[in-house]
Amino acid sequence: MNISTKQRLLLAIAPMIMLFMFAVPALVNAAVPSPVGTNYGLDDFGDVGLGQEDDLKTIAANIINIVLGFLGIVAVVIIIFSGFKWMTAAGNEEQVTEARKMLLQAIAGLAIVFLAWGIASFVLTQLKDATTGI
Image (cartoon, rainbow, N blue to C red):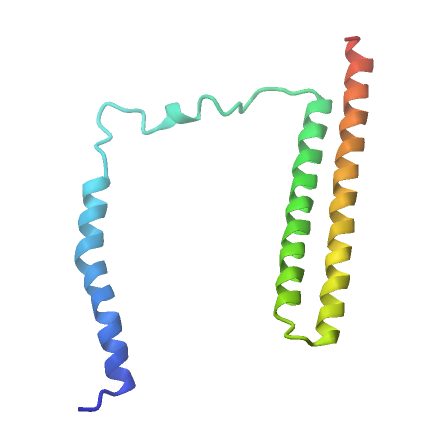
């Protein structure tokens, strides 16, 4: 008995179709709470701080932290990728050299991000101390 590719595909997809036809609608209908007597979840957003006014130093510090955090994550991903590239080079000297160069550049970038964070933190702290008198 020879099973064709179409038949194998149908046998693989059929259980998923049955799951979506029967199990998912039952779970969705069971999970919907009754909105009677509620304000539709609007109380959950009371503590997010919308509408509060922060000073410019705090906003600048938050933006700098977010940007430098993102750059740090990018540098770590590049380090991981270059390590993966090095490990999968299989002795190819060109790929090893390229991966080593990428790794060194990513480490230098991560060091620059850390230094930038330290400098920005120092400057913002000094600015806060100079303007508030603390």
